Image (cartoon, rainbow, N blue to C red; front, side, top):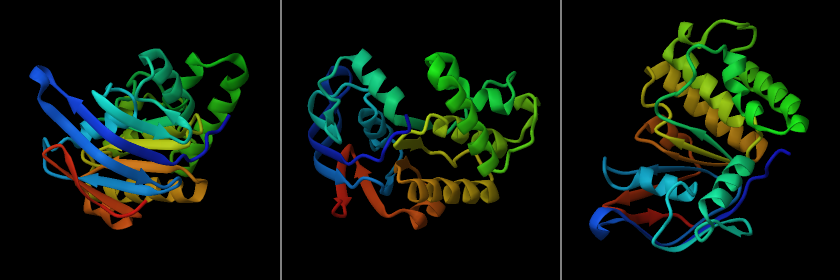
Length: 229
């Protein structure tokens, strides 16, 4: 089933690293469902830690991470993983496509791990997302024959193929040339707005900053500035 955009509420969140060093501290944050939000800050500030905590990939020391009615912070890892599969799509800085597979095979990879009833839907949606991103009609070409920008768009289609209500992106345009970065920034924000998804992207890219509904700054692991959600 296609997911719905979800409101995010974070409170009293701390994430620590080796030796108890504080990596992230967020007292309070609310992000409205369906928002396009960009997180920015210096390298090493805690931006990726923040994103992975929101995804439940990092267990916090304290606090709540509530997506809609579900607080994922206290859940065991299998339950957090199940929540991610149902609700989230990811776009990473490195496109991480399987080079030996075709674009449609890459985009529909989630079908291999889904129940029989969902496989056709995922494949159909993967094809539709590839077409939306300008990669229809590519047939069975191996993904290693595509440019970096095209491979990143394949990765975006893969993230969206399950119809997630939440899109999380970690420096999605960093490895792209300016034209492809601008196109991907536009596509991500447009998809979030037109399909009612919640987009949270970590990015240094002004093209994403300019298009976002909201900017959040993180410095030294602490949220310094955030408009009301």
